Image (cartoon, rainbow, N blue to C red; front, side):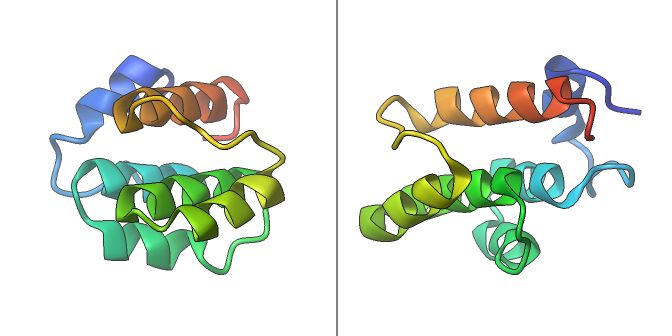
Length: 101
């Protein structure tokens, strides 16, 4: 069971995400595995602000900053300008800290 960011990060070495993850965290997990398409499929139809944040991050990875900006706005977040790794860590920590894994 994943209960914190360190455990979540360590779980990326597995073949599949932990089954108890919600959609935004599962998408973030797949993004860490380099599976952008799988991650995008998970969040593209989700309506939560958490999913929108992960969606923004995915479009930032893709290099589509216009689309990313739209999704950051939907998430109620400022456009990220740090490293992708730092943003991944911030999203994971925030989502896991919300108790909504």
